[in-house]
Length: 182
Image (tube, rainbow, N blue to C red; front, side, top):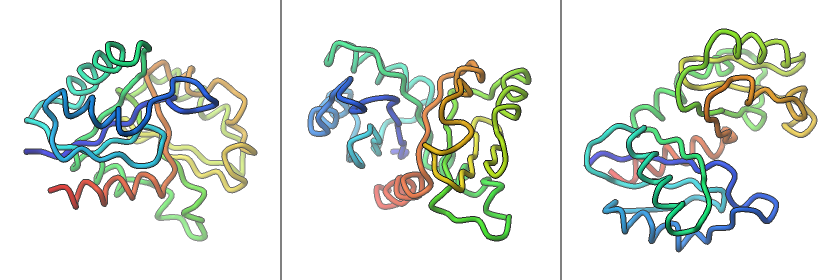
């Protein structure tokens, strides 16, 4: 069975859309997924499922969360291989002096259109950096996310696709969990 990771956007943040991880795991098991594991409280789930597309998985999970928990949550899923390629494709890894703790990846449901990318570039002010590769936006935010040029601007909305962002440590931990799940 292939290994997947699903990332739920906006759960357990600021006291909204609360889901206990044991209940989230139970919902995934009820969908027929196996070896279900969660990582931290922000909706990161690694599991095995019969071969399908990540988009189909996300839709199925979104429907289950709405049914079981009573609210909508956008879900972005990746195969283990896609997550590994996302890590390898980070353009900031090739630049000298990059602090890995200041890297983030925004996972996109699909590649954004050119106008959204143009707006992202306009919003990103040095020393911050952003770069879109396919359906991932890589961020280098040397002063942290909350002190970045992107913190209070609608850059994700400008991309006009479903997004969810994870820090570099979380992305790499999820990939390690995928490898251990094989």
